[in-house]
Amino acid sequence: MRSTREIPPDWKTGFVPLRKSVPYEQPRGPDNGECYHLNPAIVDWAFRLTKDVELPEDEKMRVEREQFASPNARRAPFVLKGDTLSSSTFWHGKLLSDWANDWVKYHTGGKGNYVTTGMEDTGTMQSLTFLAKAGRVDLTRVLVLRTASDFDQPVPGRTAAESLVLNKVGSYTGYDAAIEAAWRVGHVVVEKIVKQWPKFRDRKW
Image 1 (cartoon, rainbow, N blue to C red):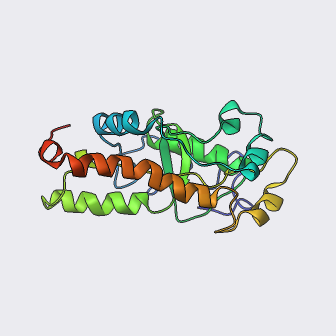
Image 2 (image 1 turned 120 degrees about the horizontal axis):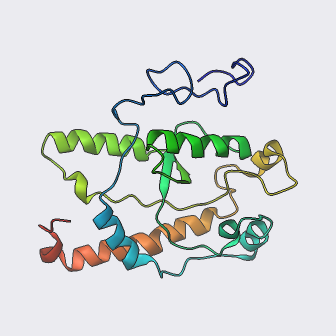
């Protein structure tokens, strides 16, 4: 990554892919932990199982989401399938949200659609990949659950810097609701598998 104050004027971003010299350089090359595609069969199964789970919401969350123009941003909390961009760098603002969309499209050959931010998922998947190579886990049985506690950009009329002041760990508008949502959705899948373990133990998705 280069500072945005130093990048060439024809660059859209200062983020450069590993082992490349310009943003979004082609050909992209093989994945070395940059991108993971979960087994669609098990993802679809988990989604069907949880898509109607009622998620928590409060008045503060409603007030914030209703300031956005996007229909999805204005929706009450809901369960969905989507792609997560994991990074150890916290980002916030419309320009970095645009970068996140472009970055996901680049690393997925245009197939991915950035939906949520994340941090540890890539590291977890890399560790599981090493274990899979050692014959200890089956990557086709991996599921990833994320919940959203805040928006990655400010509401209209507020600058990214102003919005960032309000986005501190533990003070996100939907922080408590996101933790509760993780339980409400996650336990449905875990409970199903545990109660019917003989059925799922050797199931080939």
